[in-house]
Length: 110
Image (cartoon, rainbow, N blue to C red; front, side, top):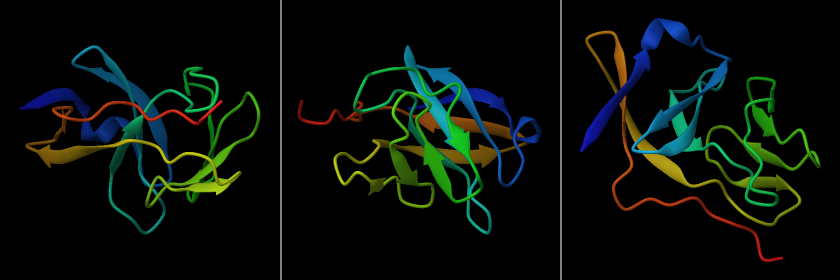
């Protein structure tokens, strides 16, 4: 079931923002030359919110220990520890919707 989380004009290509859907913190990222993506909004290493994450249009980086992920795939770049959980996302009538069913945040082995 898709939940409306924001208007699409609140995020631009190359940008990111955090939203909440079904009590889950979710990061919307729009990679350069890509499509809008929805990933878990907490770091799989520290469980810290990624609200201050860095994003250069290609890589997402956690502000705590600089773990990085490919914004097109959610796969880890450095270190090769844990991917980001990805949620289904759709844009309709100027709004962004996310489906969280069956998806939970991923965590690195500690």
